[in-house]
Picture 1 (tube, chains in turn green, blue):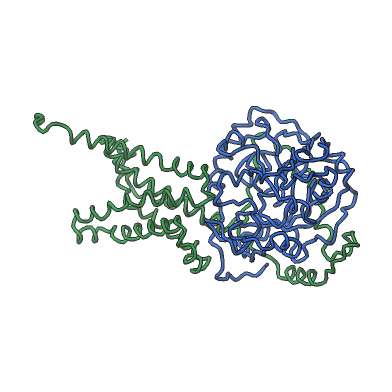
Picture 2 (cartoon, chains in turn blue, red; picture 1 turned 180 degrees about the vertical axis):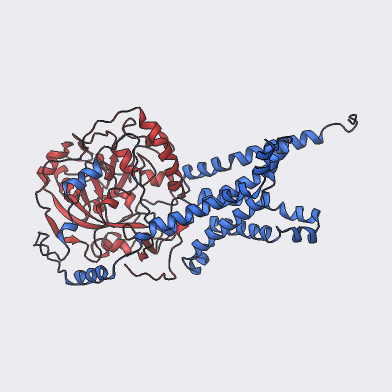
Length: 269
Length: 322
């Protein structure tokens, strides 16, 4: 059991945990990149067709339309395949229609997951003070936080591939501003995460600085919940994601208040 | 449309993508098994209205998009919104084909009309005749397709119903069957059933179409079997699916999306690249089926149908009446 906790607290446990999502992202990219190829000959044929079409409402057959008529109709088999009752448990394969939107979504979700995880670790330690499991996990706070920063950086970079102009246009949208501010916070904290920074700042000051992470909670909650259609479902979803964090932080706060309210005259053990 | 370099006017993907769609996908993939594990689904094919379909599609060349190729059938039938079933665009196909009966189907026409009508959709197809039009389809979420629709102009049905002079608007209502579709309960924050509306002159426009099929085949359930509206110059949500009622009204009808978020989805909802959605730009759109990294293309005013519909909105402030 002791060696289990040692493993749990070691890099052999945490490195695969923080790197697996990256492998997943690579897999998403590779498995969908075959859709990128569009043959150039097809493209040139396409434009010549468009130029040749003469619209004549009196004609109503596909034959001389310019397009391949088969594009307008499907075979009975194709129709059956698209409308047949799906077998029990069978779910159609999702089609990735736009890779970098998918990657933005996924990197964002992964970053938020690590963010929630890292902020759960401290309250877990306060609530379950004696659990060896929890204290083994707590050894990984720095790397989990850095993983959050890493995926957030990926998320922002993929977003920026749309061009800087987009960012400038979008800054006025509050969820973009919220996401960007949260990223700024993560950047500062990641930059001061080293032992060296910790030492040179002094523990007390360092801790004070790193408490600004709590400011990022509402920002990221808003960024995630309101970034989609912002209807009730996506907002609810964001709250579900954050609920363990809220629950644990509340528990922690109530525990700390209780601790503080213990009368000072209580006999020391 | 196949240009690969990325211009500056590129939209941010966060502005367009429903995060919840991806998130719900995971949830649904897990739950889909549980939900339907108990219900044995009979083998068979669910189709929409089948009668009155011509052997060869009767293409009306006046209404064929020629600058873009039609979107592949698998995307048209495998990627769309239908909140009555699920908010996940990839899974609509799955949930809409779990035994939902769309035949026989009756469509009622009422309100301010000379004579109320109760129509069987198959009979209606035979009576109206079916033509094919290839329209652009632009979703408010900034993705687009080009779809061959089989059907007939709405004006034909309006002529048959003979609206009275009191009729100023047309209200459309879709089905509401909680047993057939899980979305009514799951997303109970919406004001079901789905309703939409058009001004009478919009409804009478040459482009406004009632579709009973796509790609020369009866309408698949997921695309709004057996009969749906297609209003190509407006955002996709105006094109209400699976119609059960058409009413002629004096007042502007309430519509589901307008009631749910009045600041985001206006009554008109004309495709307009210059009027952004409060949370994302509408200047460009992503073309479905063009490959995973395909470039966005500029969105056209009235979705490219300016010639046919601009007169409807003469003198109107399109920013105010978005």
